[in-house]
Length: 208
Image (tube, rainbow, N blue to C red; front, side):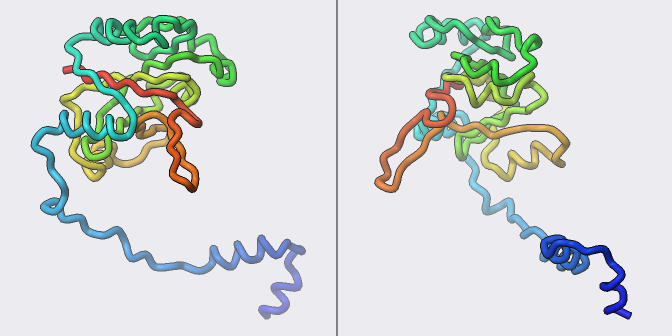
């Protein structure tokens, strides 16, 4: 009967036959490991830890009290004061010069000088910031710009990635990303290059 069943089937490639056999085999899961909250790191000063970690990975942070201060600090950076094309999802601090609503092809953002984005929360342990893709008209804008600035509340800093994923909760359809420091790469001789395949510099502004 089994031989007849195979003979009556339409010819298929060997790849499809392998996939069909794999789908027919249930592999039991061991489940996720239990995490002991008592063994997870806790920081006495999350803000300071976040700033130190971010600096270690090549980023810069600034404690600010208002959106106006964000603009004031950026204006003191030559690469910003001379910039022509700025995308911003935080207009309270920086008004965009590029109307993202009129950009239909993300490739047109390849000449962005700066992107100013809003972060949802930050992680003290590794200096990462979670950006919700729902706040980005084009997700490429945080990767393709020459320089990146993120504004996030310093009251929204968690200790570690366990807290971070608990904060995110059940994954939803869409896009989100953790950003930490400027892009970087290193060769086999451990020669580190910043800004190799993403933003050349990351500025983080910690609001109240």
